[in-house]
Length: 189
Image (tube, rainbow, N blue to C red; front, side):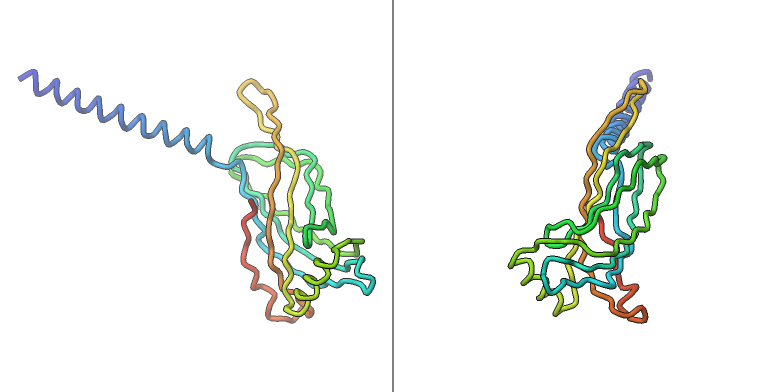
């Protein structure tokens, strides 16, 4: 009679150990592989994007909402958002320092408007003219800075932060246009 009880006990013990190893492995995978944050552009509008006759001055009006979702508590330093067209930076915004608690989302509503001296080169000017004909422009928004997390000893762990958001935006010339609101959120990598 004792042997079946010992076998059952051994079977339950083995099952428990296998389950515990699986849960531990899954937890380790989440902690070490899961990204610290998710960054996305949830909304964007381009209402003015014009290259001057000199082809060295870009006039623009771009507004967008960047969403940062944090999984673990961290602070951010020297945060900056840069706007690019044809790999040329046409606007930069300093965001300063941010703090985000775990499982929180921060929305950044940003507007970039004005003019910028930009050297697109002949290929870039040709690409601009083609985009102007179609009414769609490929822009890139970059978020850069430093992520500071804290270990169990209270020591700072500083890592560079860099995300790129590739946008294909239709130039909206009228606030009454039906193209506004057709923006699909873009994940940043």
